[in-house]
Length: 291
Image 1 (cartoon, rainbow, N blue to C red):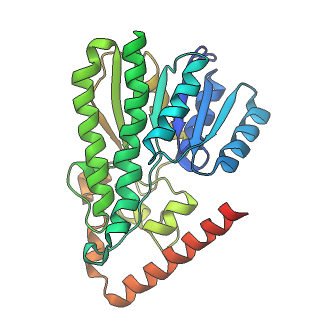
Image 2 (cartoon, helix red, strand yellow; image 1 turned 60 degrees about the vertical axis):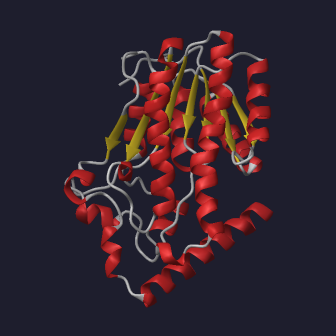
Image 3 (tube, one colour; image 1 turned 90 degrees about the vertical axis):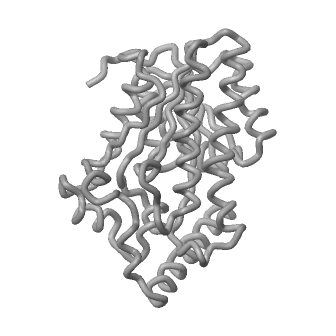
């Protein structure tokens, strides 16, 4: 779909770029000639991803271990990147989520999501954007949100609130920063199964099975479809596209609301089973980080 070398000269930062959707987007940008910067809390994972991508495709992938909840750490990372030249593009992909009845949430549980999704996304966007403005550089931001920004997300309230904040940021900064040649857009994908997130949002189920049954197109999304849309938004194919959140979910939000409303039928036993599964997944992740 895209010509070779389309992203030659681009320098793109992808948050949460070591795994899942972030890794998939980063790989596509690299194949099109971009110089990449990826970050995540686990530097070892990002370094492994960077090595794998360069071995497979060549090019340059720089890895950073940064917790985007730490504004000072984010600023230091962005400052280090800009020492070798300004970024041209930013993809806000880092996130976290899990299902829970809201009455069962603790403040710590709420903050675990809000601090990554809302605060962290703003910290990165602010650190990059203010350098673009100060240096008179054009720039382009794409953030990954959810379709629930339009109609709410029962049982994922911290994520729904935080992603809605990114949706609002997208519209607000498009209006504020457009005069500097900075575009801000967002993608709201439907389910594209990734191992870790699927187990936190659809515990005890085959990844993607529920979506495939409910989606108007009878399937989940693919990495390639997200790669293609993100590539278009970062290209100069339509520089007048600004402040938009584009749903890519096969029409599921239109047909069903695209959220977790059906979980209202769960009782205590189902929620306990879900908590047990999510806890086990978190423990496996902590063990992997320790290794």
